[in-house]
Length: 321
Image 1: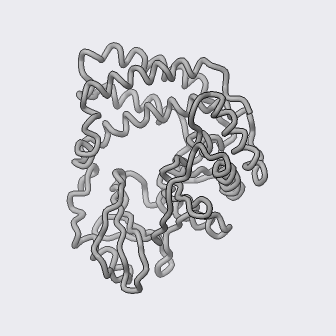
Image 2: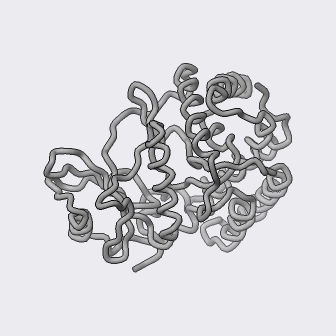
């Protein structure tokens, strides 16, 4: 089985895998938007909608996948609105012909509005509830956010890329190394807890309140990692948004305001890691098809400008609440 793609994951294998759990598929499979994994919605013979998620081979170990599921189920047991995998015959993680997969209930909703202060207040309250549960212990098998993984290894990945136009090499790597050096100096976190890890608006479904989905990137790290991706607009707007979020968060879990200094380093780490992730996955046929712009000079020109802006942001005073 390839590490990089899902070429062997054909419809017959998917159906056989799902039905190996005892769930019979009534409808066809609807592929949902996912690139790291493969995700399909279907209707069972009980007329309920389900989602089957097939994990990318060799990305996470079996222990790491089980730890993700255990965290989701723990949150659900505390009545936190997360979409947790179904327990089937006592197991949430299943294996079929080399593919680990899980089955989830299908949940609908719309994306929450990042500029809506009332919804941001809800979000702060519910992330506070997540973190109240999460503080009980750290992940054992899941990684912790660190600069080696997000910065040093990402730069090494990009150094060997043939997708970066030679004419832009010097400009790109000059500003990249400056951003990486400054972000590495600014990022220090000893106050870690279990996180959702990728709490951006696309992973929040809104229907009479938020529902959290996709804990695929859960890991240990600072609480602010689950808050800063909800911010939008200029510095003044973000200050008001973060104040709203933190006030609600503090109803359930105490937020350390010193973590506000980590927002821009974390943003820089996400930018660099994202570029390296796209390069790392380029051998998966789905990626050149979905991210064709990644191989175009214009993308790398835009990244040079974005990195310059981020370098300036790293030198500005941290957000105040």
